[in-house]
Every structure is written in structure tokens, then in C-alpha cells.
Length: 288
Image (cartoon, rainbow, N blue to C red; front, side, top):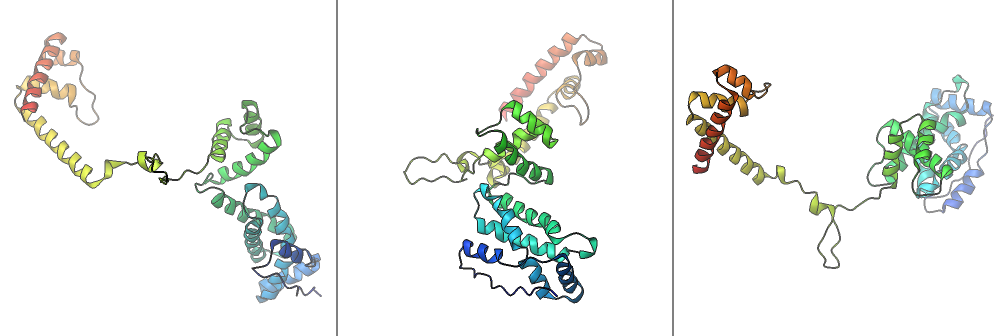
């Protein structure tokens, strides 16, 4: 026989203390009772069996959530997210594997709480990959045990990196992310002073429509002017300018000695022709 968990839980408007007291009064299940309820839920779809499994493990969620109070987030929210993890664990729990639900659920409870902390601790996410998330929580715990200072020393950084199996620069980067504060994109101008918020100096006008049109028109004019200026040159001068300043894609600009060998003159003569051709092209471009 299993215990019927008919304990009424506090309503949503009740205090967190009342909730914790009610959860602590929920009776624990023996291994046999737990296995029976799990089979009832998975084989017969008995939702009341799932409810009893959840209620009997609420104290586990409370205990786990208490360990994350240092992040400055509401205890009730941490418990709520942990409860979501507990329900996911109950849904996936297989008693045939010979593992108690308390051990199986621990991973799911922590996973949901971790996800909540990473999404709400700061507006800007500090960790996005699985490795970064692991480093975030481990680093915070180790840092608190090593020092009470705002930042780690180089020796402490190396020690933590060796213990976590990561590079020291990864530890320094994550420490910087954890210590940074959120900054509003738009500043407040209540005092009438000029705003120096990020919105004022992070503007990128490169893709503003009128700027794009102007840039394209200017590039077109330059291209047309360059073609006209090249047409005014003799064949040898044009060849030298194109080889020196306008090489084809994938090719390198020709050297003076390479062109000297091609035209069978000295490198100094090639330089003189180049200077004279550039002066003539400049005059054509200015005139246009």
C-alpha cells in the first residue's frame, strides 16, 4: 500500500514560509511505494500517482534551491523552477533501472534552476554554451572559497583553471562577465544634461539607406572617372598603372623590376613613367 498524499498545499498568495512548512510535512516514500507509484503513472497514466511522487520530493527542491540564494534571485522563483525540473524528472523516471527518484531528479532540478539563473541574473547572458555554464557556476563557488576580494589574483586564476580543466584566460573572461554590470542602451536625461548613453556613440550609419545610396553613387563616379583617366594614357603607361595599382583578383601588384624586365628599361625609368602617369590621371579626375 502507498501513502495517499492528501496534504493541501498553500495557495499562490501564501507566504514562502507556509509553503516550505507544508512541503516538509509531506511524508516520504519507501523504495517499494515509489516503484509502485512510478509504474502506475507510466503504465496506467495515473496522474494522482505522479502527483504523489512530486509532493514527496518537494523538500528536495527546497533544499537545492536554498543553495542558489547567493545569486540575488527570489527563493520562491528558484523553488518554482526547481519544481519544473522535478516534474520533468518524474515524467522520465524509470524504476526498472534500480535508481531512486531522489538521485535521478537531482540533475533535472539543478538544470532548471541553472537555466533560470542564467536567464535572469543579468539582462545580458553571461554563458551560452554548455562549457561556459559549467564554468560560471563552478567559478563562482570556487572564487567565494578562495577569496573575498573583488577579483582573483593570477595565482588563484591559475589554481582554478587547473582544478576545472580550463585555460586561465577562460577563467579571466568569465570572471569579467560575472563582474560586469548591465548598462542601459538609452540614458536618462531628467537633469537636462547632454546624454552620453551607448545609443549616442554606438550608432552605425553604414547601412542607413541614404548613406548606402550616397556611397554607391560615389563609387560609381570614381569607377567612371578612373576608366576615363586610364583612357588618356598611352598603352605603356596604362599597363604600368594597371600592373602596379590595379592588379587582377588573386594577383599581386607587379614590382618595378618586373616591369623593367618586361619593357627592357631600367626600374628607375618605370618609376618615372608611373609618377608621370599618376599626375596625368589626377589632373583628369580633378577636372571631372
